[in-house]
Amino acid sequence: MTEAQTPQPVIEVNNLVTHYGDRQILKDVSLTIQQGEIMVIMGGSGSGKSTLLRHLMALENATSGSIKLLGHELSELSQMDLYTLCRKIGVSFQSGALFSSMTVGENIILPLREHTNLDRTTMNIMARLKLEVVDLAGFENLMPSELSGGMVKRAALARAIIMDPALLFCDEPSAGLDPVVSSALDELILRLRSAMRMTIVVVTHELDSAFKIADRITVLDGGEILTIGTVDEVRNSSNERIQNLLNRRFEAEEVDPDEYLARLMGQT
Amino acid sequence: MEHAVREEQGNLIVSFQGDVDLEHSPKAREVLLGCVAKGQDVFVDLSEVSYIDSSGVASLVEAFQASKQKGTRFVLVAVNAAALRVLELARLDKVFTIHETLVEGIRGGT
Image (cartoon, rainbow over all chains, first blue to last red; front, side):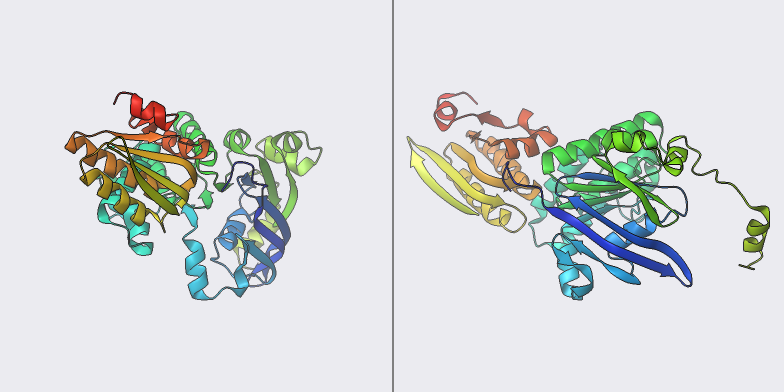
């Protein structure tokens, strides 16, 4: 990597369509994310943002369309090639997804043990470096159950970046955290991008967090992209559905009682 | 990654070129620990390092600790901006002795 490198697309999604059964979840979704960019994907419940993230993590098969990650067309990769590609991708899951039977240190070091033949001393130092980065120094011997919610998120982030991935996915990194802890996580994501030149995709419904960290924001609603733009472009959008989101009314959509009841009764 | 080791005024100068990453850091570790084991002061020139990841940084940390145990100097010189950002992320710029040039490093204190 050089300082003056021209940004390259790290993620290219073209006309992605996906269904769960008969239900269409993503409707012709296309977006490009450049190297070193922080892209925030926003939307209310059922907007398709988590489904899109799962596609980007190669965990779902699309009905149609294509996804290219780090120059590789996902549908054309063999299992072995996909495994190799995944070494360059870090994922911080919403729940943390730490193994409860392992210490924090063991959790963080796990990807190194799975994917590398590094010396044990090197792996231990790397894990402690990441704990320093996420401000969890000295917590390596604790069990996940002994951590607070914010600490679990940070430990999960440490594990996600242990391999210094080119691409980092964060699913709701701030969800359920108090504002101070949430803000610290935002700062951490910004520092990771700055220091490691990571491309970072964050799925969140936290507006403050999104506005703080995003280079661009993709707004999803009902499985389709409403807009992709900078923070200012999204803020100043005249689109009513986007403004509903910004006014935090996204989750409180109008309810059609008959339709809702029919859904509950399995009649739709 | 390529590397070179030379001796100047009783010091060992190690220079790396290219990426010091997961693939190459085992070699970097071997070179660094080998130099420290000789009991001479070691100066690591990072000016030609295009990218260093945390496995490379871990090798620097391990070699630095080994030099402290030997009572010798282990100094980073000509650290480029990209490498410095990685060191700063974990506040290692406060741990390592870092000089802008090799001449300053050799002349400087611990």
